[in-house]
Length: 93
Length: 224
Image (cartoon, rainbow over all chains, first blue to last red; front, top):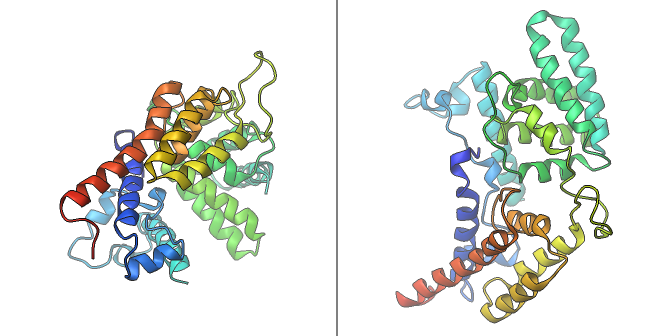
């Protein structure tokens, strides 16, 4: 999520997307195909996974949203990943 | 669905929390505060309200005030409850937008959200201001029109520069419109940003693309 110190990130994401689209103009490839379907490359910035201590604590244990269990942290973090998965699912349909 | 519906649900939920136990009283108070803030949003859709509020920049809030982040668990629980009980999808979706806002501005106090609504930033009306008195309203139609044209011209240097000159010379684009345009086209831009600086942010996205293109060409052109 966007903290006060991370205001440069949304524009950086947009600029990177512009550059990628520009680089694949007039060429054939999977990304170019997605571009012709008007599927944006940028995942909305609000879906970025925030820096949470609970996720860090799961290192070496597996997938964060699975091994956090039914705790408050677990529910919160699963909510974050659920939104991201929903966005990816929509793009793959 | 109107933000008014979300306001009513949050108030009802706060009453339910009040009745449950003392521990939840603080959450109920915060929910009521948010509901009060929503009441000041006027007749606007929840999605639009959240989108506009998301684009704003808020100063770090003082300690002690209820922050939006405190409402995340309560909103998640409410959404889960409403989903399971078969409530209207639109209402559940709207509360999801509010949950997104709470996550995004988790450190912002609800009071700041409410204060920001005292001065309407945007108007649903497409008409421009007719008098100099009264609260400033935004010409949303003009902003949307420029946004579409800027996106179309992005990467075409001659077209973009021509459009940018028109934009800079357009008297309908006041500081409010310039900030909204910069926020949508480039990235979150503080409401206090001056018109020239906001418009410079619009140009920056195009310039960055031109720089990137020049860089690619200097190392061998587009991918084969």
